[in-house]
Length: 160
Image (cartoon, rainbow, N blue to C red; front, side):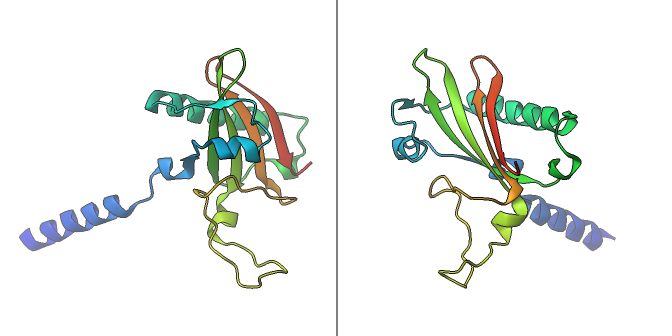
């Protein structure tokens, strides 16, 4: 019994240490080059605090909930997947702090598909920069989050 208890404690410790954190799904890209890639070069980058990052996560969740209950969104386009989020922080001309959010479904990130140029699928790296995808349905979408106003806008999905 004594050894079983020790074994269980060790097993629980190992599992809890290797379990993926929810924070792993949020990648913050704090590089001026990302603003250029998004055609936002007229704005300045800023470095969000832990609190700012939590506000962004809260607003992402709020926007997803609103999208899911929107009766104007066809049923087949309702979000059914877990997502990874690339967030680029920048400051508007009025001083408001915002994030451009690029969302990619977990199934795409974990199971990349081959393309015509390279039939061997490569692991998707979300930390190297904004990943732009054409088509792909609701698996890919983006939105702008304003954490000073606690609002979101410019929702765009590849689904429609």
